[in-house]
Length: 396
Image (cartoon, rainbow, N blue to C red; front, side, top):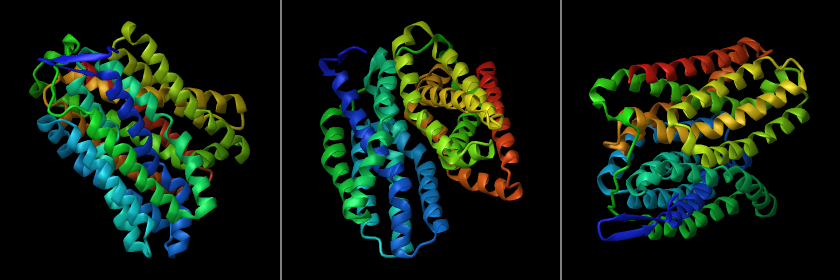
């Protein structure tokens, strides 16, 4: 990744921009997406809200993200990412303030709805669209570097949120999160993201076909990404229970789950190191195949600890690479025109399916309390995602 990118008479330091965006990604993901796992249940208990209302509110926020994502992408295409990302940070601060002062379910719902709007404007997809405009031929490495930062969000913010909760309570924790959005993310976006700058990205020759002839490929790719988002959300919400259905004790399941985060970062680091040797489409095929393998291993654990370990390693690696694939493969398949809008349209079904996944697995578990049906459905979805991705490549 080059240290500078030139546009006309202007030159800016791409490394500083990527580092600034990466730090902001850690805070944005940590305060808006991961925080519900630690601060959500105590907040719901304090205000007398049910778990259904808590997670239903979060789901509604993800729906808002999906609805707004195409508009956000078009906005970045027209005016660049500085205003959008900064606006997302401001909304993130407002969302955390609303959650900090929530006294009832309605105020909690309002907080998560605003958080959903913020997520659509400051998480990976707007970050990718912004980097596309400013990074030139370094786009792929810039995307990989950005995801390396983002991979540490839960590692940083789960312990931080837990410590704040234990020391001062959930209200102070959300207030601190609001402050971090204002004093860290907002200045980083305003100071380090170039305004209105556009640098053409030389994409793979296969992306030069007219987009109007690639509608079928777009539908297949959107389906593939949507299915993986659904699976990742389902696994994240129900991992301990799903491993328990495979015969693992809760303690062992937690240990297995703890390996996923480091493997995500390891997978992204390897992509960063070897990107010049492998095309984005090949990385995509490997990621989807590894993802399908991981989910099939999860369904086949049956108390075998080694299979559970293999699942965690494969799933973490695949999930880490999948984020990079989402940012790079669309440009190879469809070209670079209106790239922000393209990423926004692809993100829409991902947010929606991601929000539905925890409830869907819960319903499947209600049908079969052994969770074997849920596991086999998830495995089938993973194999289908791989098939859809290969169809997207074939139809381009």
